[in-house]
Length: 251
Ligand SMILES: [Zn+2]
Image (tube, rainbow, N blue to C red; front, top):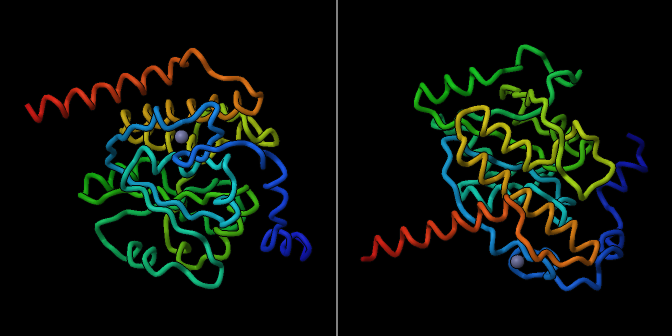
């Protein structure tokens, strides 16, 4: 990466993001264009594993960021903003907690680290068998930002590297430059959850991601969604179920 690139990444022009959609009316709840708001589809799920996001600060400005969807579904999700020179004290404390078994999710074909660190899903299973809570640490940003976070965060150096092995193709419609093999952050989380036994959480997150994807893409085309997609219907049904259960609990 050249110095100019680095400078641009550190101090990107804000206008880039304002230019597109600056006149769009957004929902304050979900930050999506109000035409097809995501709020009705927000439901929670439980998982054995946790997700901690280390988010490049530019991602926070992007309404197309999918990392935030994970926290909408899984209440225990933690989001840390990455600062190259100042590691988050709370993150460091969590990493030192023996109750957690953190894995940094990163491809296993990179020259950035000792390949002895590469772990598989069996290590996630073993952590659970040992009574520890597995944690997927996702580096949330563009590939270049994620790689920079990986390289420039010494507190990640001792963690096992968990690559995501999947034949899944991305369903992400909002960032055209992304290759089909390159999954969005929410898709990566859903896939890891699924592969390691958190099936319900994976299904809900997948449906919520699909609802986000379709809502946003249709709004960009100025099309109102009149008929909920199958994923949207499942989320609405689940929400209905939760409401019924809590009513029954009161009675
Ligand atoms: Zn909304």
